[in-house]
Image: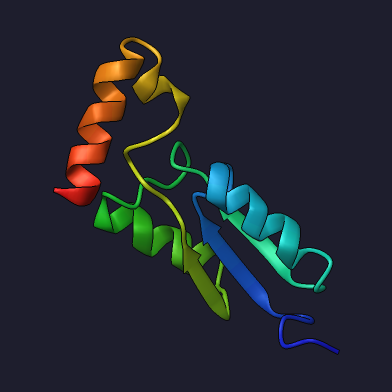
Length: 91
């Protein structure tokens, strides 16, 4: 039996790149995972965050959501977006 067996977990950003991998890892560990979606519960709004946590009580919350990222941010001008990201990360 693993730590996750029977635990109720919430993954913010569970449909994103990192979140999908976390959810795929948690399911075989027998965790009961709820993926919070922004369109249903926008965590930028404190009232929506409280409502989500009240409606879906969890033992563990993994925050993997991010407002920035994904292919949509790089598609229009790939080179410029790549350079901006590099400067932010290292400079």
